[in-house]
Amino acid sequence: MVDAYGEYEQLTAFETYMGDVLDVPFKAVWRDPDEPGHAERIKVLGVISGADERKGVMLSVERKGKPRRVEADQVWVDDLNDRNAIILSDYRAWWQINGAYL
Image (cartoon, rainbow, N blue to C red):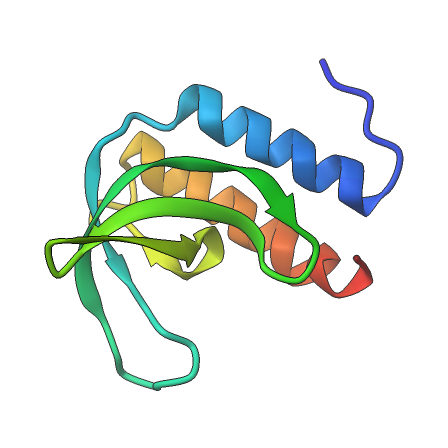
C-alpha cells in the first residue's frame, strides 16, 4: 500500500504502479486529443520516469517505426478486458478528475 498525500504524490504512485504492472511491449492505439477522429496504431514499450505535472504519466512508444513519447491518458487497448486496458482506463479516470489540480 502507498500513502499519497496530494495529487502529485498520487500521480507518481500511478507512474510507479504502471511501470511495475503494465505488460510491455503491447500494441495499442494513440488518440490525439487535438485532432478529433485521429487514431494511430502504436507499440507501447514502457513507462518514462519523471511524471509531468502538466502531461501526467508519459509512455515510451514506437510510432511509425520511430521512438516517441505520448501521454498515457491518450493510449487505448482494443480488448477492454485486457490487463493493460484496465490499468490505462483506471489511470484515465483518475487523470480526468485530478489532473487539473496539479
